Length: 253
Length: 301
Image (cartoon, rainbow over all chains, first blue to last red; front, side, top):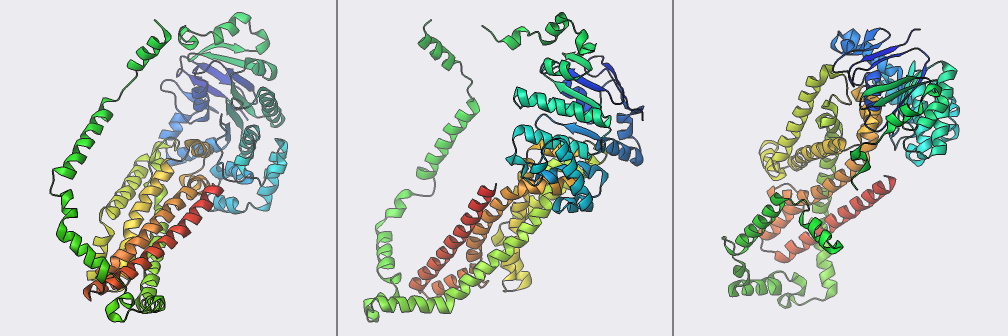
């Protein structure tokens, strides 16, 4: 199946094509527009100018369209895994309940309610499989807020996988964990995506991690693309330009 | 410039809120006027005639009958016997009815609040994170309607509701139950909606983003996250209901208040005070139950 994004002109003349199964890291300093770009890709936000296309269809048009088209938009969102910076889980539910929520977009209210009370056999087995894939199978029936930050991020990844997504978007998924765990999480994301052939778009602060795991890097600064290409080809001057501090960031002496 | 001078200078330049200061001065002025300038005179409390009345009240009227010298001056045993008698004849009925009215009404109010809190909250009517703006206008009108209903229900005091309902339903316990239920339904609906509005947005946005509907978000995030706090409000209103149920008896519904009014009508101030004491003990018991429940809820988070 063909799966490509094309976003134009919201941040500042951005023209980006992402092919199916591509692994891509968006890097850049805080406030560069990484989150906005990911929100546009996910269909949570529509560009003020230009268009965001998924599989050749404009998301904003779907929203304005018929009931059937709006249903398509919801279906699109339900097949798009999104991992947030702060995992966005319901803290006082159990891990399994958070993970089954991944398929709410494809289910009605009663089915959802039942799966919250007691997931059926098929769901339970699949939840355990995805949890084992992300390395926390034993925590299936623990309360989510008793897990560490890194483990909760794994629950969020499991929830996204449970959606049977065609693409996985992760916005600063490792911003709140230590460097060792950050590396393990990024490695996990890339491995899982490569395994099932998912399109993966991850925004990262850490250029080193991005270069280590991703074949393609997009550098954003102040809403514009500074570079787009293979990490190895990146010149030192481009790296410096990306993270250069301006007077305000440095504070006044 | 020395460090001390720089601190002084920075302190002088700190941001200050003129409005806040002005309102404090205004508040002080109003308080002073209320105490010394208005119709309420502090000195009235301490007039001689008042002192004589107080002495008579506490020395004779309020003295339990068996302890009064004129009635034979019985001892502690007689006092206990009298307390037991008042309890059997009036107290038990009054306390039982008061508690039943409070419990029934808070359950009705709590159920209404629980069902309508998500609907009355602004959380559901927002487009973001409820991205699909298609039915935003519809949800906004739903939310505004439920908030208006809540405001209307609690705008009328429970005493007035009971007064109206007594005229319609006659002197059973139902006017009191419904009056408390209606007033508290409005309060709990509003407090519940505020609880929902104060929930962290991220978990809701996360669910919305993966395609969950409003009702799915309600059952999988709003209730699990907000129920603890809602129950704190619920038990707080329960305490209030117990107190109010006592007072509503004064309108003629058979609760403690009814017996209090009746004792006053017969000039039996000793009995009246004893009944008020029963009421206070009931309220303390309700406070204690509610405190236990709330402590347990806080620990369970």
